Image 1 (cartoon, chains in turn purple, green):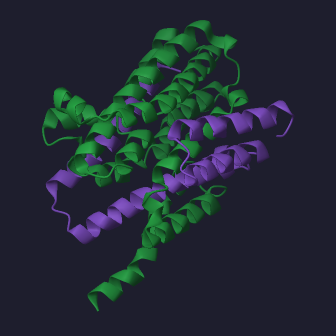
Image 2 (cartoon, helix red, strand yellow):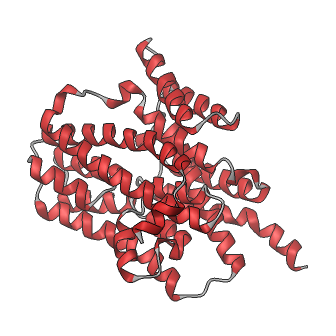
Length: 102
Length: 228
């Protein structure tokens, strides 16, 4: 791995990040499109959740992971404080793995 | 500007950001350890975390290069994984600030977590404060984590032993749950997530998540109802 690789990845990533807000500031977005954009962003976030829970690394991530995210999701739905949601999710997965659940 | 953020910042945001910041520290430490184990110098590993600041793509690029893959392929794969930040930036808009300087700095901390935290807030002022608090906190912990991991390396071991891989999706889910109470948003998001999971085995990493934006077709029927 070289500095060139790091710089290329950094420059490309920054360009992607800078382009979004910049584009948005140049064009006037109608409220309807604004709403769809925010829905699309929520869809992307839920997709991140789903991919990381079900198929991280391109294949099934195992029952311990799925159970942890599931328990965390139920806790969030039951309005458990955010800090506990994160702890319960990580804890469930960690304990299941400790007992040999893949 | 920093002062105005502190003024609007409520303690609940700080409290909610802290477990995510801690997760970023542990994951950053494991990144540092893995990268050093792949014979990358401590300085270069730290430079990578500072300049790229996108965990998934950093793990991926180090993995590909360590496995003997071509550097160009590694960079392309990493950038595909980060493509989702373009629509995230479009959705955030001027939340980063109207001044160019604010957008230059803000763009660097446009990450999944800061976007999710911003979108979970009720009003724009709070959203802006949440975006900056989360982004800056994670920038700090991700980079200190990387440094610590690169220095003490193998002591940490596999972070997934502590369920760190479950912490990220669970936290994101908790942040978007309120938005999913809206029926149309729920339809859009579920369709998008289904598209992403279904296409994951077929497409390069990163692209399926971007395809989730196609979920907005589920919002179009209501548009017809509104305009009719």
